[in-house]
Length: 243
Image 1 (tube, rainbow, N blue to C red):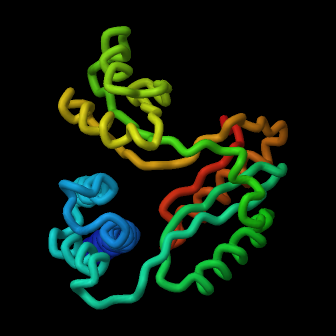
Image 2: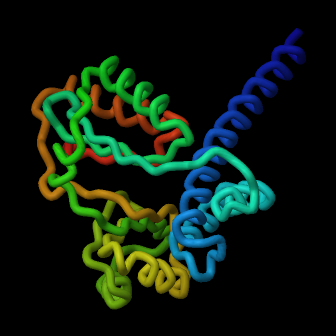
């Protein structure tokens, strides 16, 4: 019986892992398709696509999945049209949210996100209502490993064209760039053999909003997590200052 239970647990864990991988691959495929549609199917000349292909490799996404996604974007392979979206919302405590992603069915995705927002105490906002509270920035997260932040390390990254550096953990560093410098700085970090955890063109708040109520902090974290879990959402940004 114990052997059977152990095997059941292994199968359950494998199923959960497979489902998580499938979820990640599905999101990446849509992003890759959109990038190929907007900038062409050659990663060498399409910085956004190159960044996503690198992410797909890091996630161990099968090469054939990547190639199919690119083919759908360039029109070589038939498939539903993928469109980008940037939704705006007010969360608990009146904080601002930006919800970014891509979908093959805008009506369905809009309805699902509105339902999710309402369920978790947030409100849909009209386009432009909160976007002005954010700046678009290139965001690169680095794993320092045994390296410690030092003046020489920081100067080396700033010299690449970075705007700002933020220590996000004992062994992690966030590099902020202007949108046009993201790809240049990213290539420079690779040449420096820095370990890149993630990179994206995202949105950072101009001013962070402090939340005095602990329950609001919990609600905002819960809302962010559930939005991120939606299959069409690739990133969630908020101006809430979270502990």
